[in-house]
Image (cartoon, rainbow, N blue to C red; front, side, top):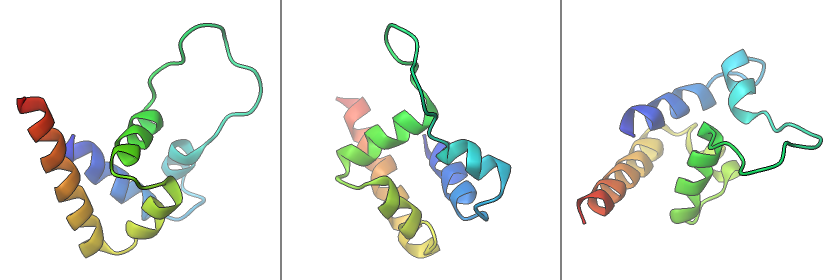
Length: 86
């Protein structure tokens, strides 16, 4: 999980025309297939952020400050590891 959040921080600090950032922030339009939606990386990130009461736009702002990002990432990784232990 920590590795995933480090990659997200790295990707969100890139320029907006970078292909990896576009893939991460892309929001498809139109109809989707029937059934349960696939669990994508973005949905997992948004679920983690919902647990922390943050939103995607705030995440993009926080990631620009590396010290603030490390504090957020440390809190997130420690809170999820304590959940797994229970």
